[in-house]
Image (cartoon, rainbow, N blue to C red):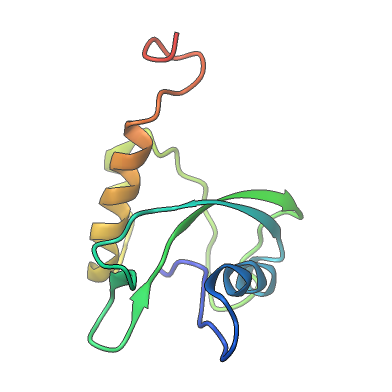
Length: 116
């Protein structure tokens, strides 16, 4: 299982690269939100040669489809922590997924008892 993203091209900033990759890989346009804080300024370490940076994003155009490099696309409620952690992530993804779940859990959902 992979996360859409890909590589930043020479001379390309990370944010436009992510927007481009999401259009290529999932056929969607997005508006990026805040970046998920990483373990290091360079992002989440995947191995000794690569790291990943993660942003929250809102789909603004299109319907996500697994067009390139992905066999499946699935929506999962982030409030169901066990379901999210039960997906077949690669080992390097687990710290990122846990940080995402912790970040989302810290934000009250409108209409929830914590929000009202």
